[in-house]
Length: 444
Image (cartoon, rainbow, N blue to C red):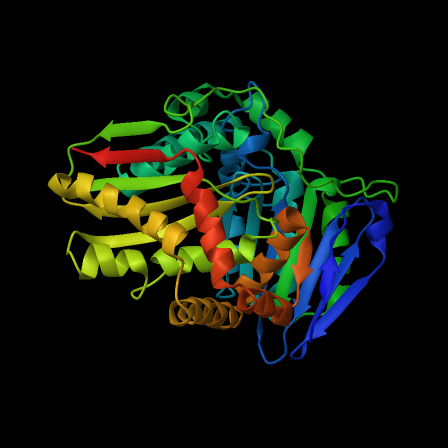
């Protein structure tokens, strides 16, 4: 079944949107206050995955608030006027459920997976956290140390470091270049008042998207969400509209990362470790770009599995690396594209050269029909297999609403992948190969 839902963030889109496929039914409703609710009722399961997505990420922070977004992800689990931190943890443990959160550059998500009978509890706890966190000063100071330890842990992982520095190099001076977790300096400097102000400004009905997938009733879930938000004191009046998606790509003021900057940046991070980690790449595509399906095929062919060009050339034929792959990180108005490998330090020059050569070879020579068919098959099979997980379905709804602006049926997504041609892949590779090339190395 073929369909697409144009997820327009405006008051006119408040009418009900409904679509279905393979027995699953997707519905979208805009509640009073501009809260968007998207559900996918999946037959034959007993669980529900639910997420409360707030349209605020590290890119949205302003002077004095840097680091606040990631701080809030931690602090909202530390208690509300109705619940202590242990109450929140115990609520999910005692029903065998799980709850967690994640901060991104463009959104923050608080999510849970529970049995269908426990969905009212999960929504009550999550809406309580999002609307009514108390952010106690003592808890904030305790969590400040936890976040500093988390940043230090990431800095000890050279794979994390090389990707973080690559994003900074490619995306600077955009606000997207900021690290999601903040820096030791911003986390140490941000005050409780600044975090509270960020919370009050950014967490509001027009920025909230609720998505759920599994054994559920859409109308019941909408009622639970509205009750929970009203209980938390959020103003749900009918005149508010959902917050519009980003499309302007504007650069906002903020601290510029030390490693970013000029086109074709070359960044070397010296670390006393056993391997050298290298990323070679450039700017990529936005999440709604018409060529995004071509990009998926391109990265799969280049470095998406054991049959990919990088795996075969760098690992299987030459034995120069254990891990190598291609990746694309899309955002609402920008993106990055890169090729990664980790190798012995004395091989890093050769490995960096091979990464560039494989992209250039794809741009100049293209790919054969068998290679194209294999890459598309890997993607389409992975897409369908991933949808057997309610968490993946829930996340797909959230990303479609907040970032892409359109929700395609599975059939349309599969058709879009299968329609990609070898010429399109070669043309995109040529574009990527012609862009200023950034190189980041981490190692001895």
